[in-house]
Image (cartoon, rainbow, N blue to C red):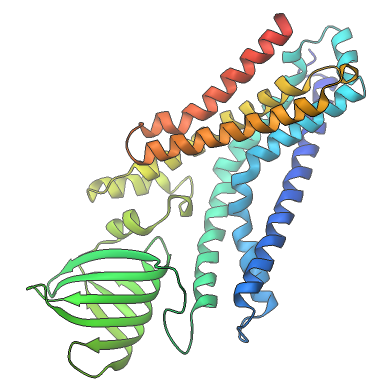
Length: 364
């Protein structure tokens, strides 16, 4: 059978090589742009070296490259099919009785296996690297002489405690929301009157309190004071903080089910985590859909012309599928669509459309 024979393996090797080439090229470009951006932002810091910036870029790179991998599959598949068509290898495959489904089966199979690898192995590595990148970024952007030199408003959380209410603002969040960087806390008593403002380099959540380091306290109507460590009471739990502050893409595929259960027990909405989990589950189907879209626009005989329109059509189709996935994600996060529907709909729709076009081209 062609799908499992030498010809199928040959097509599969060509496809895998093209995908890896596109992936490495795009990852390199992303890394270079990210490096120059951080060099610009940290260029005036004498305590930050080029090695620190390079380490930060390398830690951030897996998360960025994971998001662009479907486009690497799309471009790699289009490049493979167009090259095979230009060399008339697809024509030869058809002359020996191979259908479009037979000589695309190997590429679709590899795409599915790549999707499984990305979800189960690459994604956990990416999540760990991103968590380390967040910690390093918080360290590099922290000002040793002052606080809150960044212009972004960052993260805002309202909390309740035995001392009253407080509003917590932080520039960065790591360790699934349990560690905050560049913190500012506005405290109010049980009557709602302002009592103090606290600025600190970092805050770590413990059982019933935030442990602040390098804190500067501004009491109402009194002179400011500085403390190496300072505690602020809170009723927030790790599950509540994770549900409120932790980004879904900071959790790996294997951690998401536990995070969903913990958030449900704490009474926190879990749509973001459920959507991320379903999106990761649907990734093999999404990559297969990219191959089908590439095949639908790239299997035209090369001598018939129209190659530029085919390439443009494939790129636009991939972009529209990306926009559809983002739109479905927004609807899923807001509870308009069920997370299962929002996570699987773009991948299934792309696969169905690709199959329909191929059926029309192959069988009329």
